[in-house]
Length: 100
Image 1 (cartoon, rainbow, N blue to C red):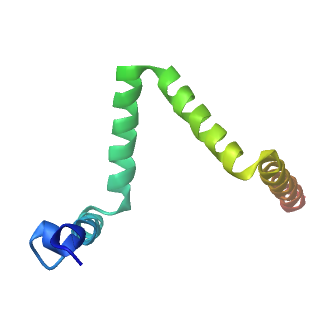
Image 2: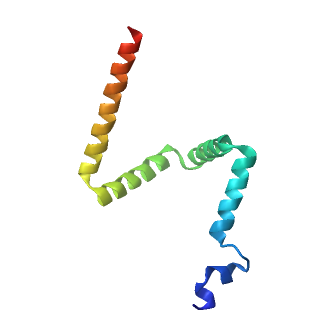
Image 3: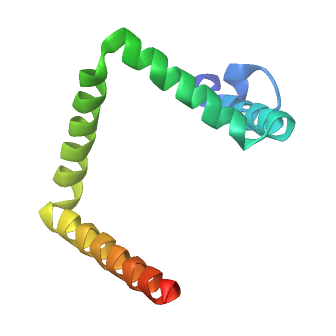
């Protein structure tokens, strides 16, 4: 294996960049908790919406949806839609029973 292809040689330590990132993320989660990630995600989303507008999210959502459709096909959406509908139906029935 050449030096350029060995990830450990490229970073100069005993850890890959991925391993270091994971350790850093684990340390942040341990220090601040999972709510920290929710908060910074919300702030980032709000900032992105202010900068690029809501259409930005519509566009990336559509791109993602098209990529999933291209990869899994139309029947994938039919299956997950049916599953979701069945779950909603079951939850409604459970709520009706518990309110009696």
